[in-house]
Image (cartoon, rainbow, N blue to C red; front, side, top):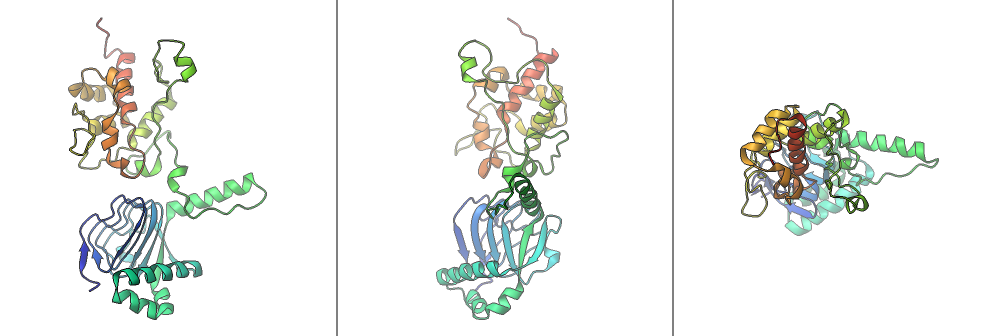
Length: 329
């Protein structure tokens, strides 16, 4: 029946595309950080659609607690919603519009055809009533971004320009701000790693290949580093700092989340101490290492990983510039 649990915890975690139809219930943390998949399911456990950034989720049954916490993009539609189950800090509850109803009818019809769901067939049989029972979940951040973008485009062009519904909030995020907040870091800020110097310049000298490695660090540079380290998500089980069976991970065991946090706090000396605990030559690895840590970064599942290599290089360069590290030829 439609109340059977068909999927365990964290199903569709970080999904980027495709469709999923379940004539039953998915357990906790369903579609967490979904960034492009479409799903129809007949019930979910707690923390559904947490940190979702794109995609579409339709729930034709009961919803667990804390639904849509941190949801910043995409859409969800819930049947017989109970507001107490939703995290209202991040979402708006809207009625289903005519275009939504047409799309939902097609999607639920596909769900019924593929799964044989009796629940879906009953909902389709009395569609007018079903539409009145459905609620549209619209992220506040996504709405704000769309409105901001619409104003900018209207000011730039005399004729109104339609905004594509698939426009991603992530495309509008800054990579550096004066006082970055870490608790929503990867939602608020985009990745920006240390850039290379122009190749035409690099081929004419033996200097560093990376830009921004001078001894003087501006306030803008410090803001950039604090913003990038704010993207480190305190994921609880970091896979960046040790080799993984599936590939990736730092072979030196660098304590990456620790020194990311210290850089974010502006404690560069302690960050250097933690880096040197495991790495004898970060001035080399910060420039030549292929960065398997970034390959293993949990954030990299569905967006750009933390700029770990750039932070590592910044720490050791700061150490030299402050005299904490002295060359010993």
